[in-house]
Length: 297
Image 1 (tube, rainbow, N blue to C red):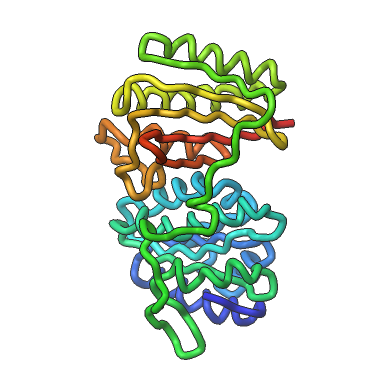
Image 2 (cartoon, rainbow, N blue to C red):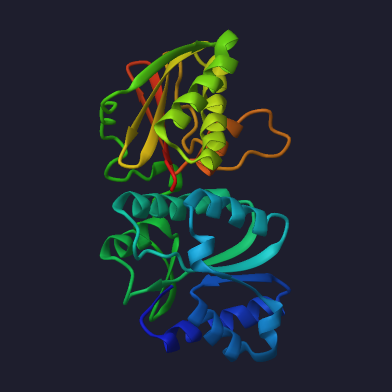
């Protein structure tokens, strides 16, 4: 739902919120604090019937956002109106959010939910607007709702950098070989490296858990062994797990939360939740999973 004024925001949002409440849907609206205030004033007494969240908090991390949407809509009839924050994000962060907006079609596919995505034409970067018709199966324009002729299913979406070769490890990179018998030592080595590099101690656990999950996947489902290479670059600790017997058989690896009873699928999902960015490449029979995590303050 693109809009270009506070008035048009209310014209779009208010009738849809009221209709959803009449249908007995639970309603979540995520946008900036001033617009939440405008919406509350317009709804009057009904404002107390909706759940409101501020975009800066809700959209802080794309895949935690995805998990939060999944949890909110699970088992409920809902209306979700969301407006991500784009200002101040790096090119990489914008790319990850664009992908998240695509993946939500698959992640919430089974849900009895209507999701409306807001875009303030005065603030949203042109690059993001270009992807609106690609990521959304239905567009809302001056003539009402229409199917997008440019919609691309999430598992077919390819962003500019997706197939580019990963850069070589940075200076001073350390490589460790691992097997099933060495997982405990591997976790210790990763933690020691992160501490020596100066990573915030509150983030080290997230890194160790992520590396351990991916390495365990390599042992159970891949070659049974692999290597881990670690280095520091631009305020991040980067850790690459290379599995010579790995393969990408999931079109959306780690993007869709596994079902609670599923014995598989947690490794990449957990890593995407804990790390800033997770990159995957399958080349020459080797699966490479590269984890990026900020060093912290």
